[in-house]
Image (cartoon, rainbow, N blue to C red; front, side, top):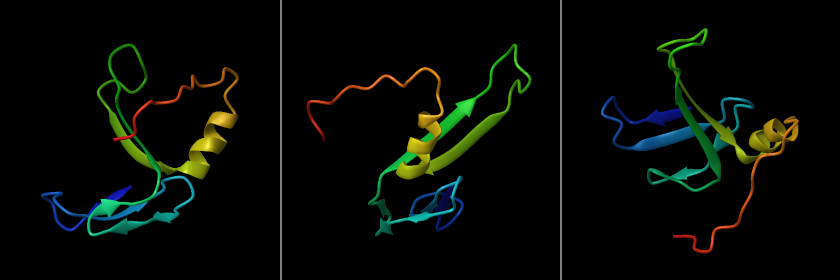
Length: 82
């Protein structure tokens, strides 16, 4: 969950993991800790047509979540970290 200074969402104040409620490090509006942001809009043919979700997971909660997958996530290394 992202918390901003006002409704214009210009300055990030805090990021909290939606799973474990750990507050991630934010300094001067910049997130300085690994976070997995998820935003999804549900389309047709499902139970949640037209609904949208947004949440953030800390790295530890992301690892816990993917460890329960029966089919592992695809992984690769990036050559440049810009």
